[in-house]
Length: 120
Image 1 (cartoon, rainbow, N blue to C red):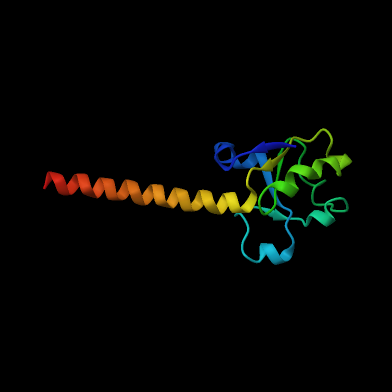
Image 2 (spheres, rainbow, N blue to C red):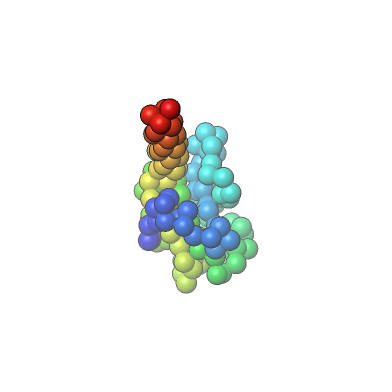
């Protein structure tokens, strides 16, 4: 399965893909990526939810760290012909990216405040 990074995903219009969390309920209790649909990996073959997603939408699967989601297309024959991706680094990457983004915002704020104080 092709991989997509969180940065690449953010560049796509939200109406062009469906984010699918394939982790078990125990892990989703810690949180899911906003807008994602939860379909446990063991239920993917029998899930009608995937067939209801329009064919033109990309399917972006994610698990905890990205390993399981990279391997699911081998087991799901009915996904053939669909544009499927595995979210690189999974949920952990999403959390890591969010923390990095927050740190970047904080750094920019500090730099902006520092330049204002120098002018005064």
